Length: 277
Image (cartoon, rainbow, N blue to C red; front, side):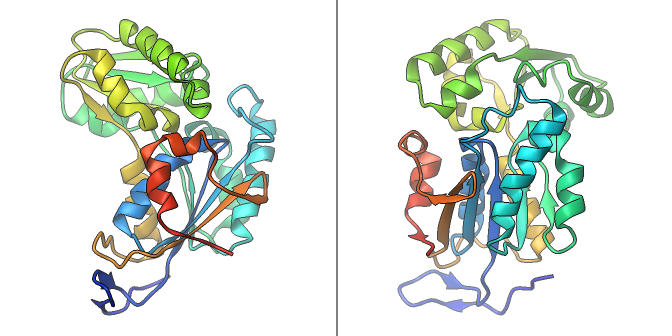
């Protein structure tokens, strides 16, 4: 396990922790941006590998077996660049492919899955709404999380057809339309909304505005980023000297952040680092 070295002041300011950490993230599309930005904020010096699957997306309609096959291709492409950990920044892939990914990559590369933040949302008390894709809404997986962690609170499952796809394509009108439809299904008494798809975190403020009242939003990006650093064995260090490198892979091919991705603040934050070569 990687351990950080004593830190020192870096030339030009910031803190140089003397070690280099590389975190890979995988998803079918740009849902991984929220977790990648969270890693960047915690470790500005971390190298990032973003591995997505434009050739095979969307993953949601695929059978579990087919989805697992695609996820393994994307994970192998990331693993070829020798990351210290791999974040599966996709709820659907975490449900269906996590055992296969861990069986292939661990212990050499720790694999961190993404779980909807139902537990912390329920622990805060009050009614909870869970926004998720139609495939996840009502699924045995989500129902088990509700049973295990939210049995004492009122929970409403809100399907969001088309929202992830609208976010993926940065389709402003479709994002507004699908958010409005989900907001209309969200009970007025809900104190918290769990964002059960990583794509949704990219439009969190638009969701908050559409709800039209104070509601706590619970995403997973910050938690999985922190867990990845814990698994690697390095501390969070927001004051570390910036300069982490960035590699983008599209279905295994080296690429660049797309125009659609760069419409989101999370991708623009990542673009400030040095591309990897």
